[in-house]
Each structure stands twice: as structure tokens, then as C-alpha cells.
Length: 77
Image 1 (spheres, rainbow, N blue to C red):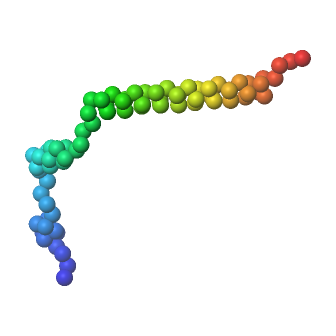
Image 2 (spheres, rainbow, N blue to C red):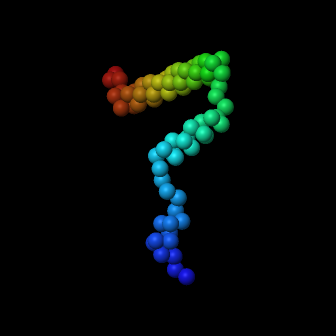
Image 3 (cartoon, helix red, strand yellow):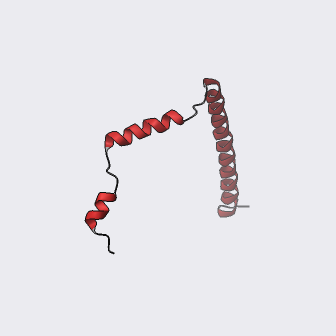
């Protein structure tokens, strides 16, 4: 048996903005939110990690740039 568009439309759940928002709120109630202490600690970890990785990437970029300059623009004798 072929499924007609009418039957498919009847079996599909209806979309409603209000229902969607209600379900979102229900799901957010199930979330275990971090305490302020955990949030502070995790924020510090992220900031320190970003600074360390930024310094590492910046240092590698600088070193590779200096090495490239020496090969591209050699010092004249």
C-alpha cells in the first residue's frame, strides 16, 4: 500500500512554538547546573588554558617567522 501525502501529514506531529518552548523549559529543569564555585574554577581553567595556548601558538609563529626570514632574506656578507 502506498502512503499518501494526506496520511503522512496526519501522522506527522504538529509543530507549535509554545509546545517547543515548554519542552525546552522541561529539559532545562533536568540539567544539573554547576555551583558558583565550580563555575568560577572552570572559568579560570578556561582563561589560563587560552592564555597558555595563545602564548605557545604565538611563540611558534614568531620562531617560524624568524627562521623563514633568515632563509628568504639572508644577511649579505
